Structure formats: structure tokens, C-alpha cells
Figure 1: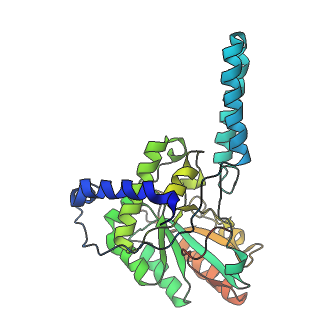
Figure 2: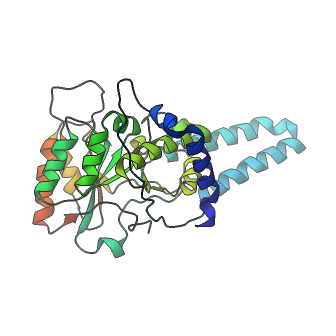
Figure 3: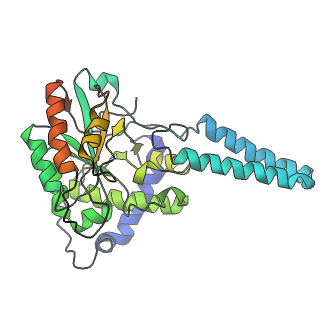
Length: 314
């Protein structure tokens, strides 16, 4: 076992022994009856160590300099306080840029050695949704396309059979937090860890395989996230291009955003989960956009693959 993971493995084991079945039942919403879960297959992860980026190293150095300077010359505290506040604002801005690598590794495209000349990766966020996900699966089946579903833990608890169906049809289930809070980027390390772990427990139990990829809600994150992902064997995934189908109703624009400049290795983002919890009478755009997108892929000789543990960060 890679040395970098031993403390997390021990922590997970202690938590499971302490909580047992009761801890899993505690994840359920009212009225939910837990499904019988089989053994979880631990898929191999690429061992890696946490290495702060140049951006974070500079931020650490600034804070250390501020503490040392104020200790020597207390009258300069206002200047250093302003510098640290500006640094925090800059880090927050960087964290709101989903495709940035300034806070750590970020899989924005498939590794060229794996993508070849004919592969892309379709990904779907915010499910599973009983009114949308089964129809998305049927559309994918029609062209034998494979995809990755970044599932919200609490929705997986509410609709466990959908998670099982995604896997049964040959697709990949990955971690999209347990609660999908838009305040996720402002959580402290402990709360971030809980969000990751609860989703890992639920999705791993239902899918039968440990999640190896993670996508943050709206792609926003904080400097605390990367070391927590490393400890859990998770890798951050964003996208190459997205359709903004969660906020736009213009089907033409959504398709154009996805296929404009489309190339092998691209990671495409759509949504099989609704923004609102209440049912909507309007058809979600993905059900009209996906068939057209799949036709474009077929015409261009591209095929969609699911993110698996073999893809890895380039």
C-alpha cells in the first residue's frame, strides 16, 4: 500500500468499526430503506504526494513574512494586514476559476496517451434524478456511448437503484460531494473532509467500487481541498468545455458551446440532475441536447469513454 495513504486507511477503518451499519443508516433521508450492499472493490489509484503549487508557496511565504515583520515592527501591522487580505481575496478568486491549476492538479483533458485520436469523455453532474437519469442512460445506450456520472451523495441515498443502474449499464460513478453546497469552497478542512467521506461511503457502497475522481460543486474550491483529495486517493476533474445547460434554456447555444472546437481528449460537461429539488414541468435541456451531441460525435468519428482509474492525471 502506498505510504501516503496509510493514515487515511486507518482513519476509515476506525470510523467504519465505530459506526457500523448505524453510521450508514444515519446518512439516509426519512423514509429511505438502505439497499443491501456488497463488497466494495478498491480500484487502484495512482500514488501521489501533496506538493503545494508556486501560488500557494508564495502565499505561505507572505503570511510567514507578515508574522515575522509584525513581531519586529508592530507599527506596520496595517500594511501587512492589507497584504494578507489581498492575498486571501486572490486565492478566493482563483478558487472560483474551475479550470485553474494554480491550487493543484486539475484534470481538464484526457491524457493524450489514453485518449488517442478518437476518444472524448462525456460527464454528467448533479444526479441521480429519477426523471432524467434513466432517459439519459437510454440515449447513451442507443449509441453504445460510455459516460461518467458525478453523483451527489444525498441524492444517491434517495435513489440508490439509479446508482446501481448507472454502473450496470457500463458507466462510471464518481464523487460530487454529499450535499452539493455552493458554500463548499468556503468550508474548513474538517467539514470538507466530511463531505468527501460521506459521498465516498455512499457511492462506493452502491456502485461497488471506490470513487477515484472528484468534481467540486460549480467547480469552486479552496486551497484546503487538494491535500484532502491526495489523502483519499481522489483526483480533481473539471472539464474542457461545458454547455451551461444547468442555467441556459437555449438548446442551440448549449450544443454550440460543446461542439465548437471539439477535439479528441475533451471532457464535456452536462447535467442529469435538476438545480431545484421540486419537480419541474419543463424538460431539462440535456434530453434534447444529448441526442444531437451524440450525432456530432458519430459524424466526427469520436466515441465517449468513462473515466476510470486507468485514465489518471497527465
